[in-house]
Image (cartoon, rainbow over all chains, first blue to last red; front, side, top):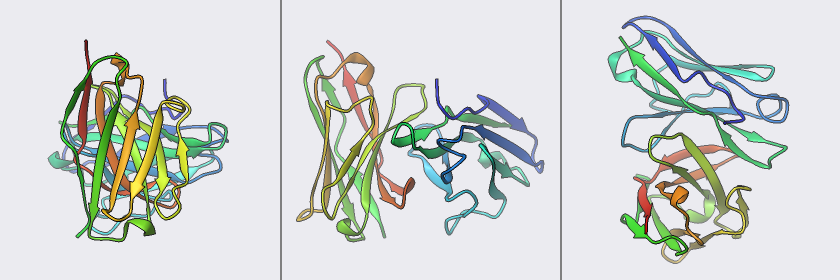
Length: 110
Length: 118
């Protein structure tokens, strides 16, 4: 069981706005940056959001990240079929002295 | 262009060791770290640790501490991850990724499948 908790699944229809949440604690999200990665089946993960809300170059502004207290969220607006993937939140954990991944959320575009 | 190219798939018996390589190009290895992340079949991502390429400092996940060694060869811009005393639950795809900052893995290798089976 992951220290960072994500809902196993989420879904939306094309054009909709979807939010994926990630719940942690004061030893991780509460005091450290949150990162989001996107992964398609059979491929390596891709950095989507870093340092809570920053987008690497090339990532569409339809993707946005936010953090509040010990929780973080990834929002995807104008949902597209190609957004169907697994999404992972990541943070450093001070208690474990290591990086922790959430369990992942499988996003389905209906 | 930044590229990380990993070694081919491996099949190992329980108790054996495996060493996965990750060759970097398109940037200076010593300016960044290299992280290692694995993914068991049908499961999520798990951080294994990282190495700071310029001085060799390492930080390993508690779960694999004592069984893993991460190294770099700056002459060939190659990073290595060796995992010993393999068990069946070590069966996974192992990824290397370029690291900057605390958990920013911005470029990834293609992954190396390690299968542990008797």
